Image (cartoon, rainbow, N blue to C red; front, side):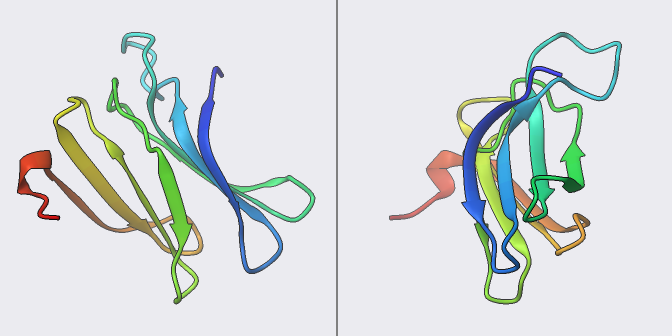
Length: 106
């Protein structure tokens, strides 16, 4: 499905968590990557995956959090917009934050 993996980490359960972009789920959308995350078990089998229809969007970094969930970050539909999403360990979105890069303070 033309997935592009930008970042992969080994998780505390011995599996893997990867983020990047993949073709959108909506067949009527242009063929540009949309946000994609996948959780694999220790044998490389898919436990869950998430993809949506935000074309020109992808995640570049994913991390496991201290509570066993996952946080991902990357641009969303516009290079000047950031997107941060927190997933629970089963792939459900717990929260999402999107805003302009100029809102980020160093």
